[in-house]
Image (cartoon, rainbow, N blue to C red; front, side, top):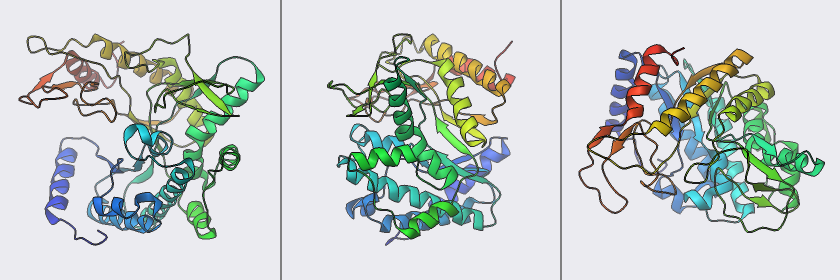
Length: 374
């Protein structure tokens, strides 16, 4: 699709997989788009080409018609905000800000269109977006830092969720995009589709919070979790109160509770945590990986999520990232997230054998207990 054919073997494979999950009391959650486009579509402009909107809708319709009676939770687009803001880092875009936000707009319209189509069909589940959300702290109590945090939150978080929930662009984001010459072209038809295709719930990935100050000249590496700056609006800075991972990402379990409350207070929709975890360099020693740091990270985040539930936040579920080591978008296999170690290096595949880390056994018990032990 659009100029190919549906692979019946692929449909059959996923039907069997979904059926097997259900038979074992595992709730399937389907993400329909996670960073990569078919080559044909990418070579014809990708998301910058408006025709991709309908191609995405056609693709989703095949998924809905094939699996819509068995899948309770659908995610439209994984980490759309990361693709828009840090595409040069994860390899999805090397274009200008103007081009990136036109692409982003087409993705928002496509998401709304498939959400509308899903609601018009006879399907059992719910559908929603899955951005990467990081609550933003001001670096100080200075008014200009407070305003910097407001604009960073608007651009990084609320742009993507306001459109999905309310069907309209966030006003602070629109002002920022106009100011820097990156506001997309939006048609009346686009506006109508956005209004008619609002979501049922919010899925989101959480790794850490961000801290910003009012903008000052400083060379800075763009990173999906540690940020960037826009002249006249904000500059990300290090938070001295938070420890850092070896890859420079802040660790903020209390910020997880804050983020859950912030999203729920703003939108009053059920939340699904679709990624949460810590990446680390790891070595296999005598067939074992001692990853106490991962257990500590997840334990503290689950504790804070429990407190958020006590605060009144409605949470549908929690998915740690990840079950198995995989190739990180910008650190390769050097940065490992899994409960299961994969025996390979950056340069060599080796035997690709799997080894259960200490965190595997710990999280298996968390599942058995349906939560942390008291």
